[in-house]
Length: 303
Ligand code: NAP
Image (tube, rainbow, N blue to C red; front, side):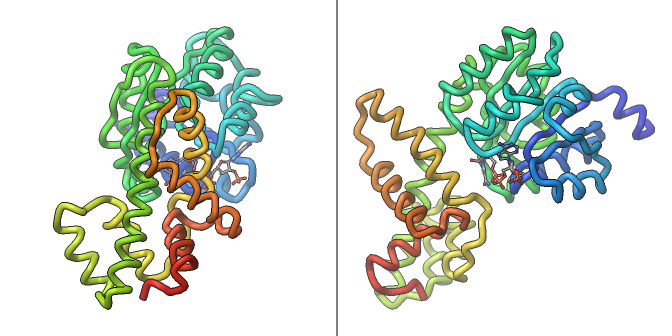
């Protein structure tokens, strides 16, 4: 089958937000033969995707005009609302049957309210946040949790499969975001656990590489120990997932904790420490930078 014939048979995809996650996700859709129209606030990553065969556009509205399925992967709720519902947003190109998928992390409440506005214009909506980091985005192995109408999810399954490995239908709209916030509770505590184990171990005179080898082969093992542990030990604080973004997610979790009258002390501690990361103006670093806060409190470094 020629590439053009293949592209004719696949849904045309629009992709808005080409950051650490969006850029490799859009590239994986191109690799699977989809026609992909892209938009990003700053131009550099649009040019990079265009050099791989994507169609560059000037607005989310233009993306939607070109597409059967529009995906956004921007930062936070106001950004999602802006690109989907704002001026020159996707909603201005509303037509019946077009599917909009928000893959960024925000909250179940935002998903429900965006769905209401888009569905009132005849569009379909799924909330489909992801886990697996920049590594999973590049390798096309993301875990994707999808809320919305089952038949719309089924229609989009092959598109999700181009970007991820474990794809789960979580139920009605907003349930994908609810699942993602649970994920962030565990991620925040695991990141802290990794940092604490490294600080404690090296304070006791252990070597960080040996410590990581032992801990990742036993009951303490986690994605964070495997992937972020070596980065902390190498003092590599470049972002795969920005600390500011985890703090944004923990803020959404804290609002739910309050509403549901729950007590989650590990999450609350992580929230405070990631708040300290932002106060130290290190929010654009990777989440592993929380180790530096522990170092400051202990007045010693992980060696
Ligand atoms: P990022 O690198 O900061 O990228 C965000 C992208 O969205 C950028 O391309 C940015 O454009 C664009 N954007 C933000 N606000 C916008 C607006 N108002 N209008 C138009 N474009 C806008 O972030 P990321 O790491 O890719 O994360 C994206 C989402 O995925 C976040 O919700 C994050 O929590 C979630 N997530 C991230 C990871 C991870 O490991 N990184 C994992 C799972 C989920 P500019 O380039 O112009 O700034």
